[in-house]
Image 1 (cartoon, rainbow, N blue to C red):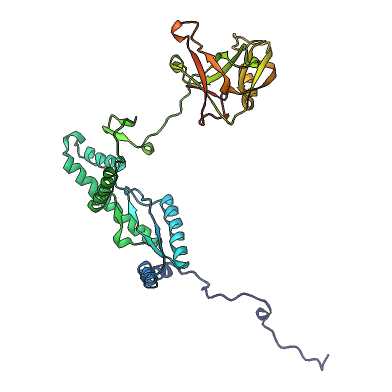
Image 2: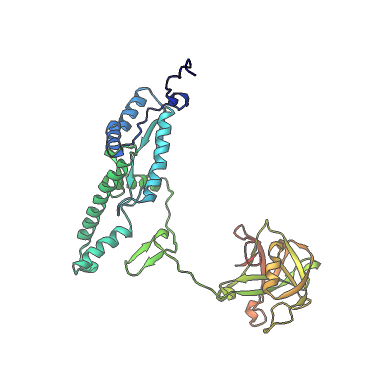
Amino acid sequence: MPNDVLPAPRDYRETVFLPQTAFPMRGGLPGLEPRILADWGDLYGDLRAARQGAGAPLFVLHDGPPYANGAIHIGHALNKLLKDFVVRSRFAMGFDVDYTPGWDCHGLPIEWKIEEEFRAQGRRKQDISKAEFRARCRDYAAGWIEAQSREFQRLGVLGDWAHRYATMDHATEAAIVAQFHKILVAGQVYRGSKPVMWSPVERTALADAEVEYHDHVSPSVWVRFPVAQGPDAARGAHVVIWTTTPWTLPANRAIAYGPKIAYAVYEVQALRTDLAFEPWARPGDRLIVAKGLAEQVFSAAQVAKWAEVGPIDPGGLTAAHPLAALDPGYGFEVPLLAGGHVTDDAGTGFVHT
């Protein structure tokens, strides 16, 4: 229409509600990240000074130290960042947070690396003096402490990095000896024997973390212990144990049971008909096992049908040794003893001891 006036152009961006943010559209991390780290500077020291000046309560986070033998990996990062969450949150809650990073410098990993270096030079460990070997290990650990410290600080982890500790520091070793002396003076130290893993190659004891186990399939046997004394329901029954160390049976002196596990007497009624071997369970046998494992036990014994005679308390039983018929020296009775280590995850619910 000739008299119509077209509306003025409109900026439709103004009709859309978009939250405003101070963050830039582009991250620019190569330039931004170094500036953030620089701004933080000695943030840890500044926060501690402020909290101490205000008389804030102390919160100490003990650092389980990483090993000083290589660049940090994702496990190191996860560990330190989780600790950093704690440090920063406690600062935000008003605490004076004491977090001193540390490093573990003792053990075989560092020694093994130094041995590799010496072997590359054609030198054997036994031809190297202890002083030279230890000095080289110390230098190696010190180098990786500095490298890891830079990497952790690059992640922005807050801590007293200027006063870090290391287990090889003489001051740390002296502090350990001083604390041990207090325990000694208090009469809490005694001499005893303990089996430990030993490395013939390194000629040293091994920590559990330094031992690797190979998968091994062990022979296992089911053994019946005739009940010697017990209630009428157990008369003629056998306590069944399952073991992967059959060579220890001659040393058996007791049977352990779980005090919180339910046990019962079962009667074998029928076996599978396609057996190509002599079964250890026969029709008419009465066997005592954990209720939760009965089906597994009878399946392993090739039992096709069985029936529960009734529950039983193993604590009131004694059994005859399974080797009693072979040697009169085994004519003693085997007691059944409660043991917290016994479970009903596998076997029969009994552990020969």
